[in-house]
Length: 244
Image (cartoon, rainbow, N blue to C red; front, top):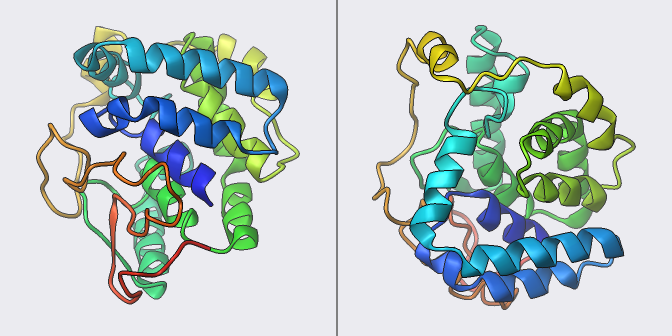
């Protein structure tokens, strides 16, 4: 599903390749028949601005949005298990799921990193991908609402994911709830939250590049050319395999 692959790229840390191919990525999203006219118009405006904004500014804004506090964390299990022991087993189970389909993590990210999970689903048959999104729909809606509460257009990507799986839950249902939440991205809150260093899995990578070190936009405008996910190595499929 090329639309999932595009969303995974845009949800990831901005890099030169994604920034340089913003127009092509936009066109791919606009081709999705599941998105409303309003959502397409909003995505168009955002991605036009995304492509016109300096990359360093995009990266700075991204870090301030996703790396300060846990409310907008892009780690799925942060919103389910927190720091409980169940989180470790959930990580193991997810890694086993990836491995069962021949995918090995090829980036310095935790297995439940949302762009990575979406990247994985983009390689699966449509029904399976939709079910995978439905499994985490409540998390997507909650994080999307928090992003919109902070006036971030990244919330549009979460609306798009919910539209793709035709979930019966929406971002709008959480907007009033999150408006009452105490922000966790202040300096005082951050000092309390990040007392312990986060555990990291996977390979080291150059933080100045996309997670795999490969151009995210190279081939992104052609579904048949984009055969290998950014965050994974497909250990079982032949290099010439096409997407479902």
